[in-house]
Image (cartoon, rainbow, N blue to C red):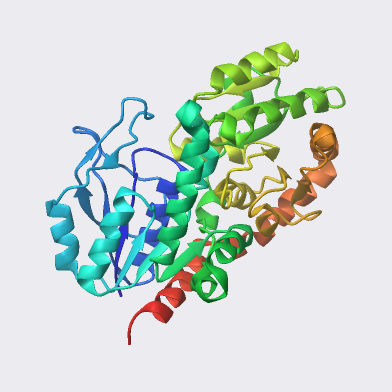
Length: 396
């Protein structure tokens, strides 16, 4: 098949969405399909690079782009205007158009699908209402408008990919019985073998921690919506029972200073490190050398980092949320802790951390079981599911 994939953001900016977009394009290429990526061009003089996704590089049609002054470095979005990139999509004659966003690039994708007479598929990567707090006093209005836009957008798609059963249920509930048949659960896959064979980094040495430190790691944007302050509270509680425990936050973001301030206030300032933004390979190498993965975000549609952690052979302690229980096998390769009741949430997460941190045999067993069971998360399986979905939607 010929598949055009439209993205709202792309490399070199690293996020779950940009990694998933490259993973989709390269995975489809590896499966023998033709792919044209229509994504925002990087800033002049910057190369997009790669997130390390497996498979051949896809052809790219670079959309004219710009960066908002308040956006993170490298995060560029497409300009809504005619361009050579859109002409290239038309000339490509896609049989499937796959949008990664419902906004500017999604509208471009919809128009391209109409011109080509092709089905429009959409992957719902982001819980947009959870980011409404960035609009300050307009956050309630922003969340309401976003919700209404999404419902209208879903109705105009021939196929909707939800990375978790929880999100799929929400979308099906909004669309009703007939519209819900368009929804398919297909998580983003990871290159299991590539991750498992990465060299290990040096989190203890680079952080100045003792070599016998037990490192709890979390990978991702350091932002309040990711619940990062809760991770600090959990480690502060758990460290009272396991003094060797340390917390490594691999990533950067607007809450980095607040997190470090909270750590100092709780008396664990020397036990918490924020690395800042790193290349994905460097981040995964630090993950590989850690002892357990700590996850508390409630804004995910899947939690791709959970799959990466298990592929790396690192057991997980996670707060229950969308897609978590579909990835982490309770009592096998990690612990999934219920979010309620709120007043005991931190303590229960801390107890789960101690249950791994203070018991090396259990930790080793969970790590081995994570590696042994990670093949189910491999990108090759996800691509087979995606191609099957495309086949159902493509006109005969």
